[in-house]
Image (cartoon, rainbow, N blue to C red):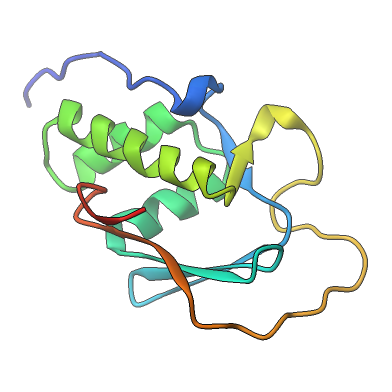
Length: 138
């Protein structure tokens, strides 16, 4: 076993590193990919296998630094590269308003109140995270 640098990634946009899905964001993870539907903006988002894994772990309240450590182990990749990519993906999710810091309060993940209407989808795709956040559009 080799020693790993203990450098932790910076947290997205200065937050604590723990996030939750934004209210009115629905997600489906299937065959390793994730599709996110933001009911507020009527936009759909797709995440590849790595992005979907990050989404699932964020949804469970896992700290961003811990996510990077887990992914580095799962993919047997250098921690610094994975930490940078994880930070980029989380930044993109925050900027797209799909996740928000857990320390902001509000409903726990997966809970909504009231009745929801699902708007007609226009087919617009606004984010595509591929290859650990290095390629694609945000």
